[in-house]
Length: 191
Image 1 (cartoon, helix red, strand yellow):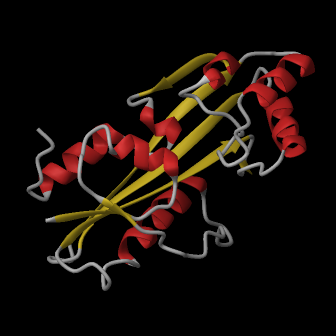
Image 2 (cartoon, helix red, strand yellow):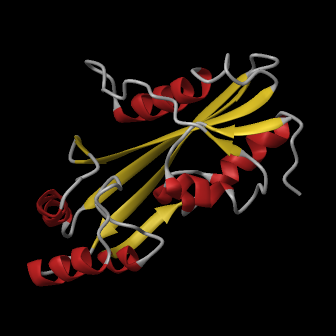
């Protein structure tokens, strides 16, 4: 059965390559806006499912993987900062604080129409760093396209005092432990 990653994210692609050698990536082009009253966990799950399901007609007889991450701090969503100034502002707000990352995952079987979804969460505790340390981080590892403005798999690990969750891949954007069990439920074994 074909495996389709419903994402244009290079980070998700690199994660999936750890467990699956042959798959295709396709951008799902959906509206990622939060609906009125929608909580962050529901948003992450809905977007993951929509990303997977929107590609179902184009890829029959496939297992389609959708994923989306929502970072939140004090009931505020942290977005991809897109530039240096926004990254610095986001990282300044997070100093000494706890930030939650909710990553929705969906495996949609376009042959059977079976859908499995889950939200895996990870809590981070940021260190209290000076502006010069934050600027040094941003200059060494610009992460403008990452929720929260950092790359945990790189130098961004230095931003944290503590991280807590079941799978560190949640922070990068694709919960591999959960994904493996979902794929196995659909008859696809990674080992």
